[in-house]
Length: 410
Image (cartoon, rainbow, N blue to C red; front, side):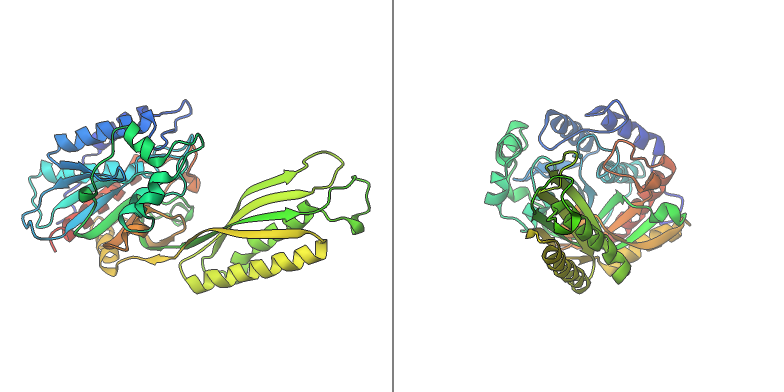
């Protein structure tokens, strides 16, 4: 396949415009949580689009939606492409959504040119990738890959006590276990980078070589609240201890350098009042790296520092690990196809490791997997200002088209 075959950008823009109206916010974002009315509306129109494109649509017992374009060889394992249509609260228009709508455009383009493939091509929309309403995230892909058992997933509750299963039934997307993804040879997920590197390096394609492992922790610090006039040397201030710990966490990437990332999410202080020291701090943090050994060394550094700071400041600490996912190296074959696609269209590219987790990191357990990144403005994501130019979107979808067709003919 040469450079001449490109997707229909005008049609893709129109598809995005329709998506943007479903759960669209006044500030140009998307608010489309799992199993809400907006999620159902988006699922319904996505199913119709796939049927209109001649795909055989099915839904599995976790609500994952698949559309299959039959290949010439019915016995060959398929190529699967896709991502997710749900969003974070008041989030952007592209995270996940790009990967699903781009996959639809790939199939539409192949149909336009009457191109057949040896392998079948399947589009997928994974349920609850974001995990904002039903925690943890990626329950749809986690269910079909055995990361979580069915009973656990079905009994996960949202903030109102509604279970995953109840939500699935409410929007009428409870399908059959027999419809789960199976006999998949390759999976490719197109996604926005959610980071600054492609834009900073003036590259339009990220050839993703893997996803960093992520370990998440909850830390509770208990001190003694005292009057603001109490001598500093005699205080057991939870906030001061937490602040020193936060700096240790933030300093780990400087120690290890090798693409390690750390972040602090929740940071709650009590009492949070003028002229009084803090008694309690609740905080969360995560540590990410592709190499599990490096990640563990950083975590051990942090744990040791927490104990030392707690002793020095006279506070009590309780550390709880709430999540642990291993890093995932992607398929060399799929990585090579993505690289070849970028070179075929003469798009500037670079190799990159994903810091955020994606459905692809789970699907890599059952199929040879890869990802394609496109730059997002200032690296911003999970917010309404999230933006990707259609010029860059077109390039990303063209590379997805190239890699999908090549893999579907192996």
